[in-house]
Length: 107
Length: 116
Image (cartoon, rainbow over all chains, first blue to last red; front, side, top):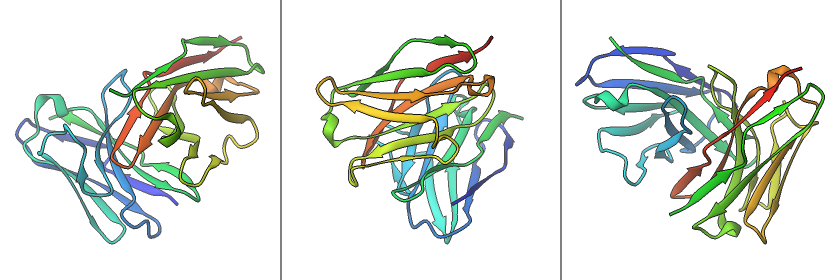
């Protein structure tokens, strides 16, 4: 299974609404998580099972799915949101597959 | 509070092996699926393999299949990842991750530098 994440870089401003997409090359059900990673830190999970918000994560983060296309939406970007995001598909058969990452940068 | 504490940074020569540990506290070790992920400098996240608690199987990424071994010691709630035949391309931060359905936790990372 391959996960194609786009864009690789996303210029934005504080208060913007942004979307990041991951496309699977085959059906993966709802087995898709979204992670945030800040420089020098381990990733932290934002969304699991496509659209479930991890406890403690702000509600401006949301996830959705259309077929094999998965979307992370950040409503009203905050200064601390300018960092890198990854999608992750987990399979009991083929293991984990990460997207290539999206760096949300200040425009 | 679940904590994953990894062993310290390592410097290795090409051809050597490295063994990284990940001690888990704050949750039942036997209920967690434990995986290992690495990140080369300036690069993305790369899954290496892991143990799925539901299946009871350890699965390795094809890239590492021949030179990685993942084990665990349930008596000390510690997971281990050993990588053999190191090259400079194995220079990376290595993370352990422990998860169950509703939560995922990561260690702080262990920097492994491979240099002659």
